[in-house]
Amino acid sequence: MPFLDDRVSLVKCDDYDPERVMSAVARSIELLGGLSRFVSPGQRVLVKPNLLQPVGPDKCITTHPEVVTAVATLLRRHGCEVVIADSAGGGTPFTEARLKKMYEVTGMSGAAQRSGAALGVDASSRSVACPGGRVVKRFPVITSAAEADAIVVVSKAKTHVLTAMTGGTKCLFGVLPGMEKPSFHGRLSGVDEFCGMLLDLNEAMMPKLQVMDAVVGMEGDGPSGGTPRPLGAVLASGNPLALDIVAARLMGFRPGDVPVIRMGADRGMVTADMNVSVLGESVEAMTAQDFRHPSSTAASRLGAGAPILGRLLRAYALRPVVDRGRCNGCGRCARSCPRETIRMVRGKARIRHGRCVRCYCCHEMCENRAIELKRSTGGKAIALLMGGREGRS
Image (cartoon, rainbow, N blue to C red; front, top):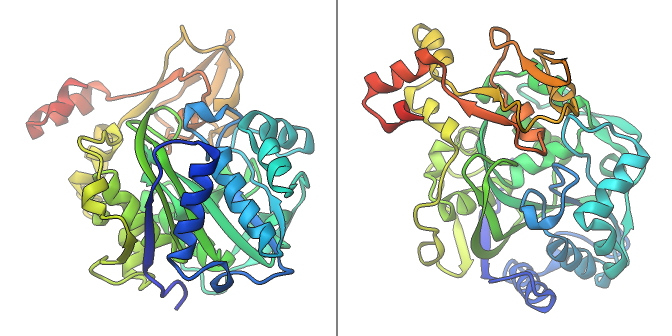
């Protein structure tokens, strides 16, 4: 079974000063036994950050370039051939020109220059088999990932309106090229189906090492609509699920409430009790107090197992609503929608809620934060009956 090593290193890092980041990243890897445990000199290594949108690092939507610089520099010193590459979210076409723009805006061009790494601008993809997959048996994958000898995921600690949080496991979704992402959301509209696919993808690609930028994370309605929140940490592990367990605790989640962690434990990718070995700092000492979770996660507390609750769950779930004052008519939400429920009408987005599957791709991809998540009248009534404050949202 892959990812049996459940050790996670946790190192303090209060800001993005280059020397402090380099020291923290190096220490996090040293605590695990050093780079030689994960990669060998001469290997072609993909450094895969989280580049959801072409926005600056101050938004905390993307992995900070100083963390990517540190990881790539250490790999280069180890004798590896390093490529930094990713594919942005589903509303962004996967072309060489768009990749170059994304790398420039997110700071990855500078990270490549400082570390001596190359930038992956190849906009082609390959088909990768996943014979043991429980949800998906074959994935389209960007060529930079398919041709790599090893993958090092450099994720960002953020909340996520669909999957509760995004970390190492979810970050690998970025190896699917551009518009393939909405296709997978459309085929796998249930949270458990989607998270099962993420686990299949991680088993297919088998990233060797995980490093997480949790210096400043995102709370609230992430992965793009939340608020930056200092966490002051860098994490590392050879196991994406173990990494996410520690990150979840830092952000105030119970790991079992995060669907991908729960399902990974069911598969034996981490121990059933979700206890992992933490090296370095104490998780309890570094856990953020009152870290705001996504408003959408309250729906999961109703439970998704009983079919009789299906309509209630749909009514209760937050739905995307367009703020017409903020909408600039760019159409990215429509391009990212897996069910094609969004149209542009007189220069503004319009959502047909009867067909909406609540995947929140539109919310995730809107750079102007013009997609809000709100309850319908029926959803508010259900929330009031539950006696919770969600009824006032």
